[in-house]
Length: 349
Image (tube, rainbow, N blue to C red):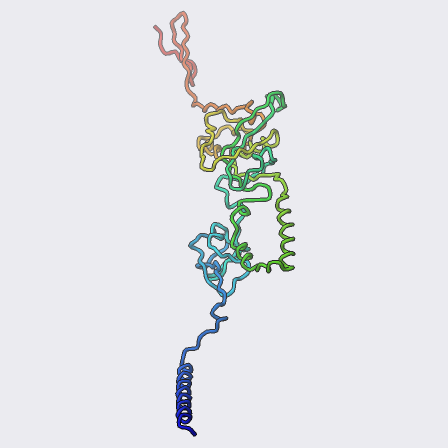
């Protein structure tokens, strides 16, 4: 065997032995290494869920301090994702600390948007009476009234219509089939549904089917039913006037800028006479109590009062009995004083 071939064989053998030693060393080091999680376990999805920061009881209004966000491996159905979605609602059931707050357990009706002393009242509207259907929940409107003339007797109508501002700066709670909740920005529930829905491959049959369905849905959404009612937040003492104006005349909603806070000062004008007069013999405290909004609403208003043909005349305050003095001069010059006692001769010249 030539000498060159023997040298090459020895070198190859040495290289093989060296590679074997290196492989054994790597194998020993990998056996002592910390196990690495599989790629599937590392990418497991996590979900944000609103949970109770402490034990919550039914009937309490929810604030941001009552809630917190926890990251869970699964998202329970019908739960909140953002704290702002649940704040302001009324809790309908007890929730333990750390437990998810269910959407079905929180009341978010438009009644929660009413301020103390306000009531939600629905009035009829059409395109003309609602600024061309530009009114939306959350807007502020002035309510104008167009009313036929009303005679002073028996409330009969006569010629001469009137139109005037009836109520200033009322909040619109609902318009048609929309309210302040449905008109709010898309909630996390819609976001969740969007995230969980996968878009079909372009050009596929599924995409074609979904495209046809969405086209029909958009066409249906454009052909919305015209609004017939608007729900307004009305001071309780003014509800009677609003109802009379709606039934005896026609109401018009005038849109206004929400930062415009100017309102009519109704104390400058004669108030309509109430249907129920005050009971006689009331003391000062009871008379003042009668001016509460709820009591004014109970006293009511009639069509003549609303039209301005009958105004309330303030009843004169009951004056304490006092003595009256009369003088009668007779031939004898006797002065007679009449008071609570019979006539008594006082003096004579």
